[in-house]
Length: 474
Ligand code: ADP
Ligand code: MG
Image (cartoon, rainbow, N blue to C red; front, side, top):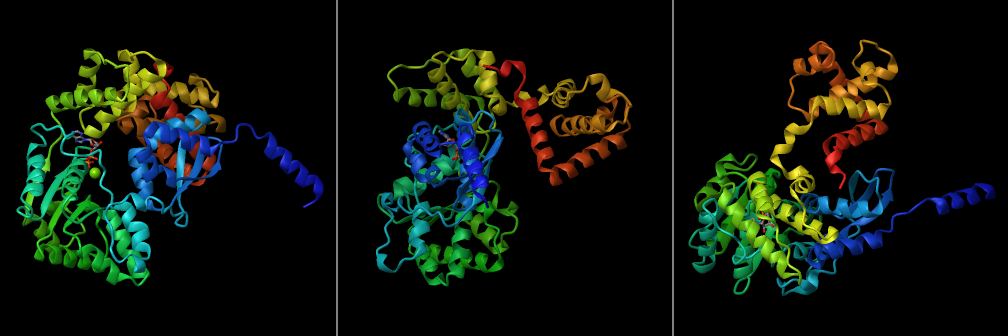
């Protein structure tokens, strides 16, 4: 490389506008999401590279990635957006080496023989953490979850009476909260092991690779209470199921308590051995239903109270808005709480209470009513604007190259964003035949696979259609 080139490159780098300062973003994440969440999860994120509309970050494991994406991605996206306006998405890479070991100390599950512990200490202890914010005291009960709540409480009072206890239900309705509550209580007097099933598998595989099965077994079989979250993800190979089954039996035999959560009843678990399922069914099986209106209302009240305790000035959300949320955000308690968090954050940032239209915008992605809002007309308008063609051209029979792609794109987006059938879509695009519609959809799907720019454009358009209606501009 000659000097001139080097010089130019460094000039280029210098003039690159607004390079992302990850440290600032991290500070902001810590501030907004709290140091507990930050220390446990977000600190593990490493920044890799910045692109026009997205950034690439890395985390050490798939588990952490899944955890972060399911719980915090939305908020992280908002935070990074403060520093990078054009951000549309965040991509993750799994890089095992940036392990972060310093939060072991916070853990009250201590292994006595600390001299010989290799990765078990490094990784397992990190995950064996009971979340102190999820306790029985702040679990709001209603008809949908009372049984599960009471069974969980019983387990902490009458050790090993219901064994195993199997709690199942949909996403975001309190399973993990109950498991945590049990862990929190029992930890005071027993040795507790709390692990997501996915983590159990990961650890198992790692132990085999490292020739460390003895430690693995010892570790699990030593516990008085084994809480396994989301057992539906336990879909490992025979050897692992074998190990799990034996661990399970060994624990039951020595009188340890086992608590399992899942998204479905035992007999519906796929890829899990029959005998394990039947073991699950042999204990107490309770389900949690979707929250009814009354429970949703109570949770809203409780959450607002809780959040208001953190600040001097209280925020009073109007009855109209509370009614609206309790009606519209009905599937999951996680989303319900997320909705409240967003409204309260909005109030604090803009120093005013959101009115109903603003609420609808803030909560757009959480509201059930939104699904029908995307119209073919909106899609056509935005796609035409994007490709700088007129609607007449798009709907015309002309097959010029510069019209075909946009037309196919609009058809594709209509297919994925609306519930319309192929013939219906055909009618909206100047009575095109449904085979043309299929062809368009397939073409774009293929292009998306092979052409990164194309994929990005489509993604951008999709976001525009979903989020960029006029009322969105707060
Ligand atoms: P799941 O494990 O069923 O997907 P979680 O237990 O993670 O759901 O619950 C999602 C969120 O909702 C958590 O923040 C949890 O604390 C909260 N939550 C769930 N159920 C209740 C409840 N009955 N009372 C208070 N908070 C709840
Ligand atoms: Mg859960």
